Image (cartoon, rainbow, N blue to C red):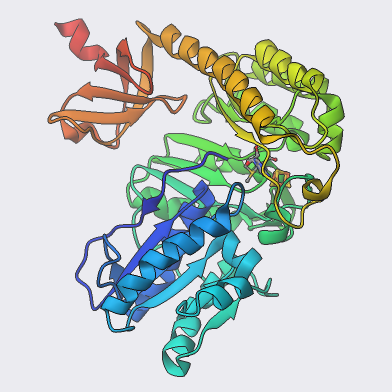
Length: 460
Ligand code: SAM
Ligand code: SF4
């Protein structure tokens, strides 16, 4: 799943109490931050743009790579000073996967933190706030509760905008050798279809035109169907596609093993399902894929890509790669480069393997030296960047559908996304925000495209 820049949830501020949420990590964390704000709204919390002087600050963390805990402690040091400036009044909460994995350590090293909560317990936030305020001591909630948090969350209070995220599935049972998700997010769980469709309808009623269904392994979703049976993601997407007012559908992140026939057929049959799929492969070497416990080969992946492209010829692909997994040789890495050349990606994320405490790969023999990981990452990113540049260059002069999402950075400019998630700028009225229009691409920039409305060009 794509990582986002650190983001801040922001709403209109007519505060009785001011809440500032700092979000690190994936789209699921962005969604969770919104839901934590919703849970706290009945207590009078409204969003603050900055942490200075806030009544409560939540740091929603990510544990997937790198020095996650170090980063959290350094940010907590900064927040401690802000808390002191409020005379200790500010409630400081650490949420997300670092909280889940390092809860006790956080309270030991940062005793000024009031609440530590894991991703499965944020529906209990009001009670935790009450306990923290009353007792003055720290509250820790990092269990995996028996109740489903989605059954206890209020309806979304704040509109997400033209594009919205909707979590349909959480947790993972796949236990890839390198990954903390099964430990921090727990076992795989799917929300019922009726709850998802109702949430989607509310999002559409509040102006969302594109919905991305989210899950750690979203295509493993198999939820209770309205008729009492069980649906897979392909059927859910068909039901979503029939919702009036919804123009675009996406889903992330998928595992190649869970790409079933119904889902491939949904790509064939649903024009609103965007022809852009994030399908992480991690490595092109069968030896490393086995060591990673991915349960598919490079050839399985290539054949899957062929089937998807036969179903939807304009489909473009994105992926995740890890270089330097324990045991990876030059020959294994060469196999990854070969897979990349063979598929041709429109975009991709690539990472140096980062040992995660408690995962099987962290203690495995054959750890790859850092300098070698860096060399391989540079080579892989060079290849992927070239493919991305060629994909973007091929868009020049073509007409692309663009869903406009907001104002651009320059006066008079608006920005939207192509079907392939490329940012596209045009100079047009902001009244087009929320609409999908055909745009002739006139220029290709390193990370975006620009163009003009097709009607404008034809009438000129
Ligand atoms: N469920 C998705 C899948 O099966 O591919 C991946 C979700 S994971 C949250 C997002 C990405 O982070 C992974 O695809 C992987 O490339 C990367 N990642 C996870 N653990 C990592 C680690 N220990 N070191 C480096 N990258 C890692
Ligand atoms: Fe992590 Fe593997 Fe599960 Fe993806 S499938 S979330 S990489 S354990």
